[in-house]
Length: 293
Image (cartoon, rainbow, N blue to C red; front, side):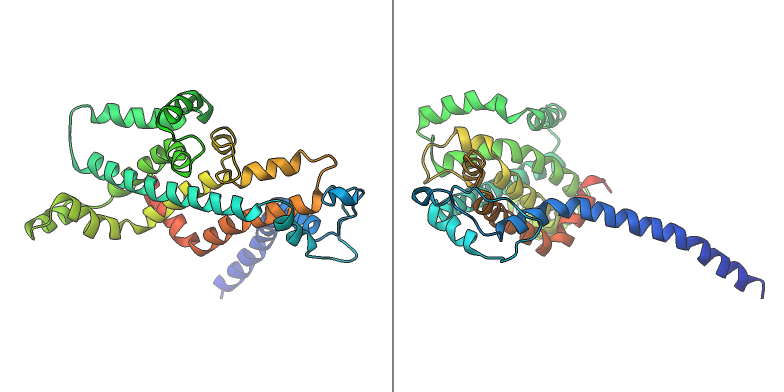
């Protein structure tokens, strides 16, 4: 009988703690979502134009919630600027960089994990240093190389430039992930007649799917949000990406609140949807790749 009162007292003592945890979680959630909520409200607030010749320059004040919500800003987004072209460019470059990064990182990680060769430790250190180098340091060498080989203002050039930053990170992630897989799998497959590349394709890649998804998504997101390379390595709308057009909105005088907010929402949706769809694999891949088993 004495155990029951102790259980009740323990549960009662946990109520304030749970309340504080819930309150803290609510504060963090509100702090994280407040900017997105504000941007969404701005995107559905009607524009009041001051100059009909330049209809997308606004003089209206943003309210906490519009009296007459509208989706007209989203229509104006695609009418006033070639937003669809910028969206397509971002998709091509981010998707191409994701595929290139996964190919390079998978081959490199398998080589580092399964082979012992001279300079292996030095190459690993060099990979880590390459990831820590700021992107701005690479601009001048990339400009010279791309100008020499005609890669300036091209999708291929942008993909190669983005891979200089994403490939080292994903390589380090996959090295840790591949290290958790036992060598017995490789040996058993080789006994059955598989070569090294076939072992990688048929054994290692399927077992490393969470790590590959995590690395691929991070490479995609890094490229999708990167402004520096897209701004300096491109010169026409046929290659420029979404961060560049968002900068043009920000430089408007006066600021184009509704259209700019609509562009921010449309630019954020693909990354948010991808994260929600692959959330579990992303988390499991990062967790498994962070600790060597």
